[in-house]
Image 1 (tube, rainbow, N blue to C red):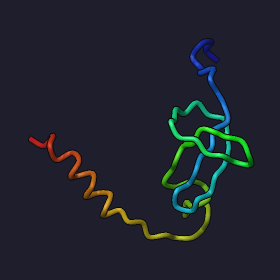
Image 2 (image 1 turned 60 degrees about the vertical axis):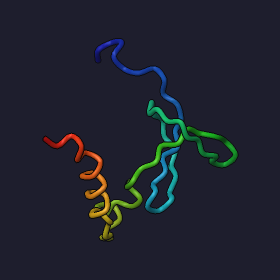
Image 3 (image 1 turned 135 degrees about the vertical axis):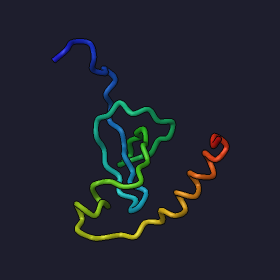
Length: 83
């Protein structure tokens, strides 16, 4: 491996799946401004739309997501850049 290219600031970070409120801890360098308390200890929080606990591939269950609202929101946000 090349020396000096890997980050040094690994720390425990809480990742929260917003679709099912599942929280899990892992080491990460992700920057975040939010925190969450897990078992009496405060950790930086990263919110996710989908994770291994809610993804249909891992759960075997299909879920209908509201993609139309997100697509319209995206189009409205970037309409000002249209030529």
